[in-house]
Image (cartoon, rainbow, N blue to C red):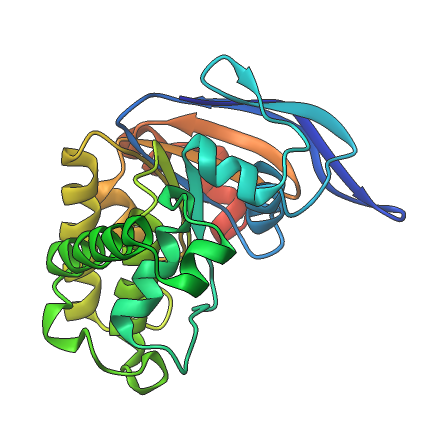
Length: 250
């Protein structure tokens, strides 16, 4: 589903990523972990079109998506969430999810301004689909609440709802458990499994090792900008190099 080949990112004289390569299987849940400064978010930013890599290529299926803009990637079925929750605070929960459906909309500015029958029908469809995604993530009762008034954990779920509204092939989540309590993290884990059950592929950067080991089938470890290991949760837990990177060597 996703293939990264030889990604290198240099900022001035600093090498943030060096020759990182890996692949992600369709319909899998893959975790990317590593100490602070390992290059995890930089890698996400390259894959999702926010950064332009110095060297290397990114493939979605067999399509080379290197240097594609984020909005183009969304239309191709690759979306992401952010470490810091990014919502339209003054819009309702439902409206935030409707924004995620913009790639499905065909109405232009004139049909919207004139409220033509086709545009009215399309808006009704968008609203209905948005409500379906709120039901999927358990936010139906909050549909009319302004996003700025949501508790932090619900804001996380709303951001995922908006990304899911695009109906992507693959969703990248940047530290989705950050700021969540143990109960909210358990809800998140169940939601991630539900997303996989829809046939979607999930890649997540995460510091919550309990969540990673619980939901991920494959784990990639980065350290100092390089790929340190790639394997199953058990293989990663028992890897001496991974243990040394996290805990230091005696």
